[in-house]
Length: 202
Ligand code: AMP
Image (tube, rainbow, N blue to C red; front, side, top):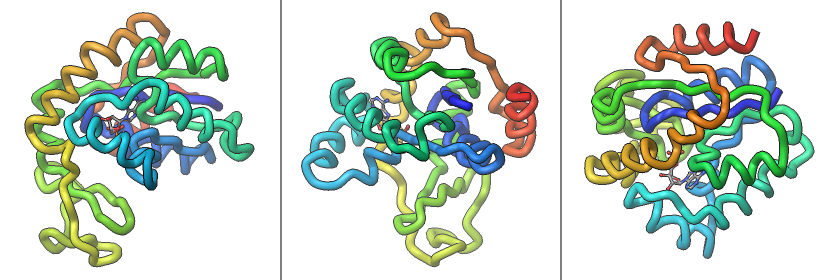
């Protein structure tokens, strides 16, 4: 199965992509994670765009995506999280492979801003906590699993959040107008959203 998860920042698409990938034995491919884990020149090139909430240039991200998709274990069973982000990327993806379903996880801008401003991540294992919604860390500022300090992504700071939402509405949403997708209400519990996605996938 080849799936795309699309949703505004804070919709929980990354969380759901991880859960569903595990349940259905698919590979989770997040272009945001690939960029955050990049090294050297690539990291430097991507960082300034990412920190200010802008999209990195298509050429760069498409190269990274192609590398990711070419791995044999990923080829025919994956969830794409964070790609495509605009119509050009969607068209490029069409040339590489066919997709079975696009799942849109929908939340309001207000909810998105509320959720993102509470988001803290572990430096070491990457787990995301949320001090406004959940899961909250047991001890403030520390990861439950590895005790490492938590940090807030630069692009989860208020100015960047607004910019990222603007980009979502202007560049990413047109994909949903052009290609058939299934909308899931993201303003429910994590468990309920997972159930709704699994129902749609049959
Ligand atoms: P995410 O973790 O998906 O929110 O991505 C974090 C940041 O990485 C985005 O704000 C962009 O700067 C960059 N990024 C991730 N995926 C893409 C993409 N498909 N196209 C362009 N930039 C991307």
